[in-house]
Each structure stands twice: as structure tokens, then as C-alpha cells.
Image 1 (cartoon, helix red, strand yellow):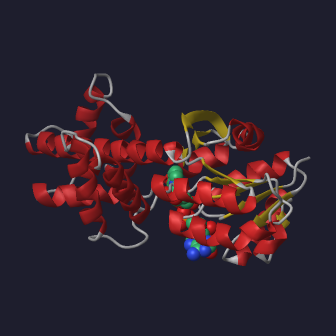
Image 2 (tube, rainbow, N blue to C red):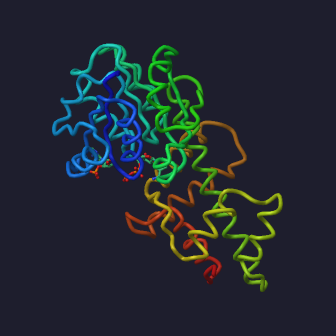
Length: 293
Ligand code: NDP
């Protein structure tokens, strides 16, 4: 089968690459912390690359790194070694303008396709192979080539438009995700202070029109339990909010999302580097001078 590769075996990438390795006999994986790649090779039968250049025969190469900065650093090291026509797919939640620039420049210099394909569904969705992908590509042929590889870990691949479109949709999606969470927390805090048990309030709301993924899952499972351990780091969410704010600031709008994305970036400074994104609720609780229980 087509030689494929994966870079970045983190909370998301480890499982995504696992699905790729199960479907492709030649799947090479590289990770900055080598131990994880060695473990991956044992668990899924992937080929553990010690050096980046060992990915050089990949026809489809998937990245799942923290930000566009790591995307750019790694792709610049690899690009001269890759075959012309190869597809590098960024599942990183990246910056649309950086992605567009990289896509143009890699195509011009090396004949490579750089596609944006951020994912949604969290570590559990990655493990289940049920992620949603938001694909941006200037080349329909490159999208066709990458599609079967993406479908090994995605249940749904939505073609969002040209280069950068996938990353733009992802940024807005995440801004909505965390805004719904903060709105839900603020509403529940008010109700709790009026004497309503938050779980009772959620029971009513989740049978009503105010419900969201946050009221149905994150608030009961991560907040009311005080677990705050969904598996998506707050600094990464703050990064997504910064990207969303950049996308929004160029356009006329009511500022609602701009304000909430700004709040998330401020709240991220109050928590540690490993804090889960659901910790934004702790910052909302400070205003109410009480905790949700
Ligand atoms: P993690 O922090 O768990 O993993 C990050 C990965 O990137 C690791 O493999 C890490 O290597 C590698 N890495 C970090 N810095 C560098 C570097 N300078 N050079 C090379 N490799 C590096 O992140 P996630 O898996 O949670 O997230 C990855 C991307 O997916 C992010 O853009 C995030 O926003 C997005 N995302 C995350 C979701 C989630 O729920 N977690 C959901 C949807 C999207 P090492 O092992 O050495 O640290």
C-alpha cells in the first residue's frame, strides 16, 4: 500500500497514527520524544523513525503538532527529501494565513501539497477513529489522494474550501466550544446562587433548547465532578482562541466571540501549562465567588 508517515504522537496523534498503521503496511512514525514512537511501533506495528529524514518516502505525511510554528519548522526540514507530488497534511490546529503561505511556498519550491485538516472529537474520538476533519486544499487531486488516509481515523471529512479554510473553521469551532462552556457555567452559577442544584438545572436544560455539548457532557462530567480532565490543554485552547480572534478582527461583527476569545486568553494565564481547557470554569467561578458543585 501507499507509504505513509506521521509526525507528533501526542494525545491526538498517537491514536490517529495507530489507525493509519493498522490500515497501511508501510506507516512510519516520528516523535520528538522517541520513547513514544518506539511504544507506538510495538503497539501498532508502525515503523519507528529515529531521524526525520526516514519519512522521506511518504506519499501522504500527517502532522499533529501544537501550533503552526512546529508545522513550519518540521516541514522545512523534511520538504527537500520528500517526493514531488507528496501530500503533507496538517492536523494541527493552525493559523490559516501561515498555512496559506506555506502551501504556496512548498508547492512552488518542491512541488509538494500542504493541506490543512484539523480534527475535532478529542482523545476519545481519536482512539475510536471517529474524528471530524475540516479539510482545506487548493488542489482537488491532492485532497483525493489524502482522503483514504484521513478516513482511517475520521468518520467525517468536510471539504471546507481552499488552503487555510480548514484551519479557519476549526478556530471558530473551538471558539464556540469554549464560549458555550463559559456561558453554561455562568448560567449554572447564577442558578446555584438562587438555590437550584446545578445537576437538576442541567436535567431541565438538557431536555430543552438551551442545551449544548457542554451542558450535556463537559459540565456534568468534568466540572460538577471537579475532575477537570477532558484531555485538551488550556494553552492549546487559548491558542485556538487567538487564531479565531485574528480571523474575526479583520471583519465587521458584534464582538461577542471576540470578547469571549479574549477572556479565554486572559484566563489561560491563571492556570498551569498542563491545565485542562475546562479550567476556564474556575476563572468564571472567581467572579461568582463560589464553586459549582
Ligand atoms: P499534545 O501536547 O498531547 O501533543 C503534542 C505533540 O507535538 C507531541 O507529539 C509533541 O512531542 C509534539 N511536539 C511539541 N513540540 C514539538 C516540537 N517543537 N518539535 C517536534 N514535536 C513537537 O497535543 P494534542 O495531541 O492534544 O494536540 C495536537 C494538536 O491537535 C493541537 O494543535 C491541538 O490544538 C489539536 N487538537 C487537540 C485536541 C484534544 O482534545 N487534545 C482536539 C482537537 C485538536 P513530545 O511527545 O516530544 O512532547
